[in-house]
Image 1 (cartoon, rainbow, N blue to C red):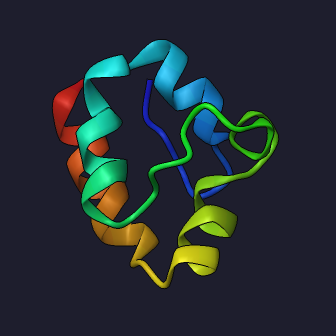
Image 2 (cartoon, rainbow, N blue to C red):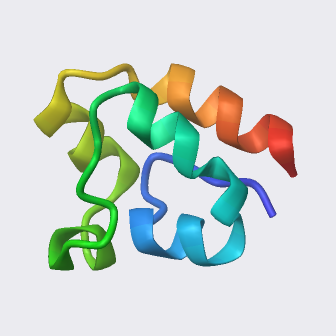
Length: 63
């Protein structure tokens, strides 16, 4: 499966828990919060001032 900007952060972590460090690297330390269950990667990156494309490149390289 390839993750996109529309992928939900919580779903990504459910399917690829080894990707959690990539979220921590960009300052997303609230991976267990309710927002992560409904927020897309694009929304989360915008809220944290991070590059969604760069994050997705790392995530998709794992799978």
